[in-house]
Length: 445
Image (cartoon, rainbow, N blue to C red; front, side, top):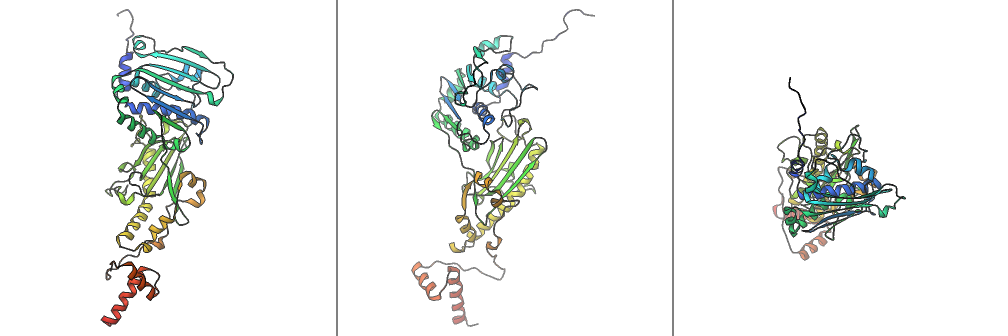
């Protein structure tokens, strides 16, 4: 029997680990992960109102900086959990957080550059740390070290708590992208979209000095229109809320919006993923096009444990094999069908060449109020129903097989004179009565 050390070294090299860790991560997603961490901090302090919190990002060819006032990182959390490569089983849960696997911040920093400095002030502690990634990668020890730390502070005010991360010695491809104005524009647009609900709740995000704006989550509301609403508790710590209704016509904004812990994962979504299948299967509806530009659907998955949420690991798409997502998608398709029916009826009104006063559904839409989703939620009893509701008595009458439709244009002043002579109240009545008069006088049957 052979003697000696029977241990086989299977530890990964740090260089290989870093390469594999960032291979499938885009620079934009890396920055998104850092924004998520800041939002998690704000969310841990105040879930519904973010007006006191801000995130500032500076991205140039020489340096990347993200700074926030979102609560800071406690020294104990930093020492034992925040910089681990993976989430330890005993890590305290941050209720409703977006971070899931415990690698987002490190992966993002490795993606951006070779040197990073972190300064953070929390409720009763502060620390600073600097990591030279190239140097660290050559060491056997996987630990990082604080430059300075203090975990016995007098309680720090909320305004003073926050984190600043600076990355230098940027990767060459990162320098190129940060020097590209088109990349910065896309970055602003995509971070803005991902965080539209957080911005809607008041958080301020700036990238290179430009303040990101919230796209309003809106629905139409009136005595005649009620948004469809469904909520469900899965019994494992996760819930979902679904709204389906109509709003202003906007081809680019129509569709479904799916959020996980308030972070937009997909949307406006207009493909088979959310039921716009083109009618090829029973689990969907028509393909999305201009006729449905008023459709708005909002889905909110919530879970204290973010690992339960039906998203993919990069948080930029849904887990299409998730039983949870498939169950909710089926409900989404059911909820959207009455809305599609309503929009089809509106199209029917237009295609029948009805004069404006005869386009009852369109008139009803124009007279309805477009309000925020928050307004809908504050008046659920009067604003929502289990099925999307609209007045069916206003639906345009279908043409009978033995009927023909007559439509023509005449000078308005002449029409008004005829209307007055007939004592008619609508253009439809003018057309019907003038036809009846001619038929009686000239045809004589």
